[in-house]
Image (cartoon, rainbow, N blue to C red; front, top):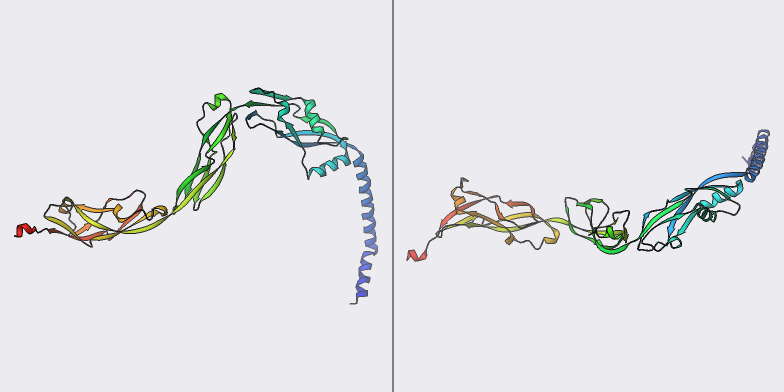
Length: 336
């Protein structure tokens, strides 16, 4: 099919009778929409919007006891086009009313601040265009209470659970910073001896971690800083084997114990950081003369540890049983 025929078919479909009717319908629909839009944009309309609220410039020694709400509900009135323009702009920059703490600070140790409806409406109106009328603001009255607290530096304590996997162990735990500055009324501060973190759980740890956690919040207390970092050092368990001699205890002077073999392997589980600190001298494989006299093992001695170092586990002795003899010690002076 030639290029000319293809173009001709396209023209027939676009400018055919049915297509012509569809284009005429779409044209009148568009014109109707434009007339409607002009009418609506010129009408006075009401709209309800949310405006963020925050308290700025709070001194470090001030504790806010009853705080402000986070948002205000504002009912506004304006022409439809102006409202649509403001709605579009709010997609990129939300409206927010900032209250300067210093403007209402009375310098007292304890104070309650009330902001009148007139002041609120004046602050809110700055966030809208001059043509927009503020009909109402909810809540219509704002109030907060604060306290100029004393400060004290207190240590931080953990209020969390930290667990490792079965193949790992906790080498060390540190908190940064390990103490924080606390602002609170005198009556509250005098009862405090430490600051606790919020409850948290770290489970199944296999490697060292740094975990940020906030301090436990209280109504009359302020911290600087408000969160700390918990550093958890994780080590791993390893296996070690040492050769331990078998010794006899409480034997008569003319008798001694001989075992075959004279020493056995002791395998145990130990923290990697203590691997080189544990030696065969930390273990004792021994039996007493009295125990051997009561032994019915037909020349076999079942080995048990008399002493082992702290921190080792899963101890295995190989072999568990050995052959033994009680030898008579020949006194050379008696032979002469």
